[in-house]
Length: 243
Image 1 (cartoon, rainbow, N blue to C red):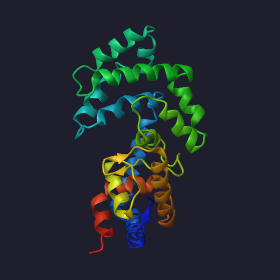
Image 2: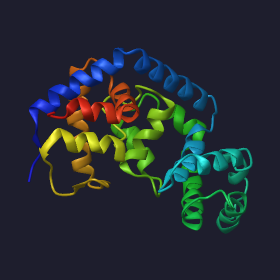
Image 3: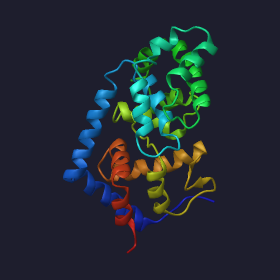
Image 4: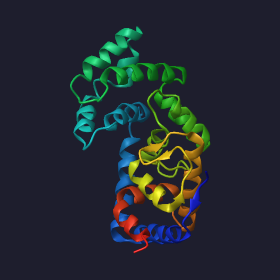
């Protein structure tokens, strides 16, 4: 089973993305997203912070958990955690500091973060890792993020896209919102592409390639298309419909 695109939906998607990119609301949204990215990367530990915060969105609705975790970031700065050399003690410290924030799987995520410290230490710390990777290819950047336990195809891209707009040239953070647009774009999708997500890396990259072509034809970057599809999903789906 292969991808069978609906050419009418594709043409309307290109027009909708282009229209939203030129609209007052669209431009305002992209400007706000760039501002948030600038604020995020102002921290030398943005990679670590992004990783900690990413687990706050797993199967959680709203931003309550995000805000709870964000408030604890000063306590669990990478330098503080890395100063604890015993792995079990590190995990215990993280568990203590993140107790009650609302993580869906707190023990599991604290284990993931403990493992992440080892990866960052091998790379010379999160600041050095970020600096070394800035000039790397999309593949290299995504591969680094994919080392971390619990980081999906989406998050391996989104952590870069949240902090460095346009640093990934052909990437999309395909979450459940953008996936709705992907599913509406095709009359048939390959096995393994489900409304809940795209677990297979090859299928994910294929969907990503289709969206990259569409963004190019809409005269926007992939980052701009991604942020616009997420923000204006309902309107874009309405624009794509046959009605």
